[in-house]
Figure 1 (cartoon, rainbow, N blue to C red):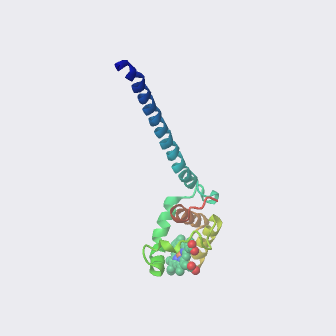
Figure 2: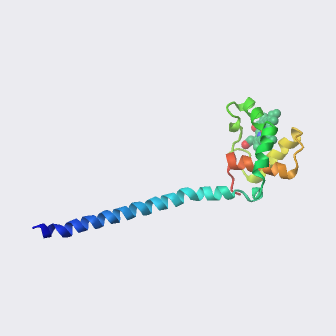
Figure 3: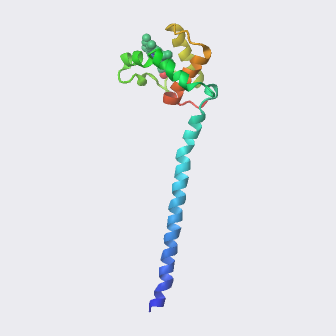
Length: 129
Ligand code: HEC
């Protein structure tokens, strides 16, 4: 009587193992898929590669970009950044920062403009090309 049950128990154990393996596989696959966009993002747009992000963050603080934007749109000012709007490529984003630089007379050097735009891209626009 007991013996008859053994293959069933073994089969059940096997199917549990297969179940676990499938679950683990699905989990790993999900993880890879979830991480892929971040890998692309970390790389970012070509024109921002090698940009000095720490410098960009510093310049954004110094020139009080967020304060002025917040006074226009409220909150922390970040809703002024509209990736789906006019500024819809990395090149246009950099151009917009250059335009603010000129209009507001910040006198940033070209690599500083790039650094600022790279930070905005990392935090808000997330353009990859
Ligand atoms: C004196 C106020 C003021 C300051 C300071 C300022 N901005 Fe702006 N900025 C604006 C206004 C107003 C707009 C919206 C213009 C529009 O939509 O026509 C804008 C828009 C932008 C946009 C375009 C947003 C989009 O997606 O359309 C970018 C990028 C930007 N600013 C970057 C900066 C950066 C970087 C700094 C700091 C180095 C800065 N701005 C400082 C007033 C300011």
